[in-house]
Amino acid sequence: MATVESRYREHFEVEPARASVSFLGVDPIEILRFDDHDRQHFASLGMARYPMADPQATIVDPSTAPRAELMVSMSHAADDLWRQLAVLAAAPAIEGAVYQVGNRVDLGQPLCAGSRCTGGVLQPSGLQAIEVAGLASVQVLELIPATATELAWARVHGTDALVRRWRLAKTDTADLNRDAVELE
Picture 1 (cartoon, rainbow, N blue to C red):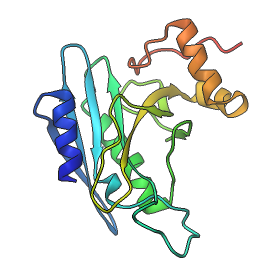
Picture 2: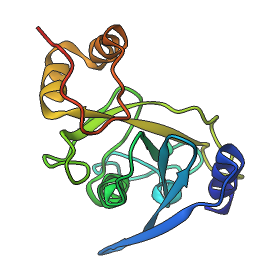
Picture 3: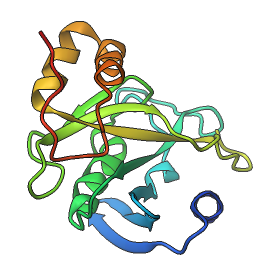
Picture 4: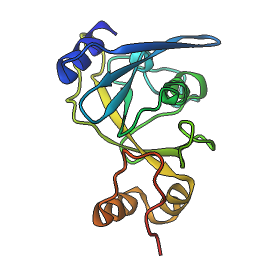
């Protein structure tokens, strides 16, 4: 985890604020908040401690099984977002979720107070894969916040189609209080 945290610090070039959440039977998940001029960036730390694998798998090779951390950026302060990000980061260890680019996740409740977004889609982040000796590299996946309506539409039309809609509409996906994009 020290390697991942070091990479975060290099990327954001500021000291983070920290929060930690414990879940029964799993080591704590930390959420680091990095503030810059007009954005807050929340990043999980501890999700990559365990390789992601199908819960039905009897053998998991730690040198090849995927590992990831989650990151989300927002354009306004929301000090309570860290709790929901911790829940998502614990899902691979608790529920056997395997996160990868293109996945959709929906908590069924707002990501933070006042948010219309209840989950999001996973996309590549601006961070390169983090190499860790003897283990599969750690991918940092960006959670792009989405409303329940957008997530339902993406289940039918695909994540890539939703991302294209956002781009065409010039949607500020870092605004968690925004309305859903026009979906026809």
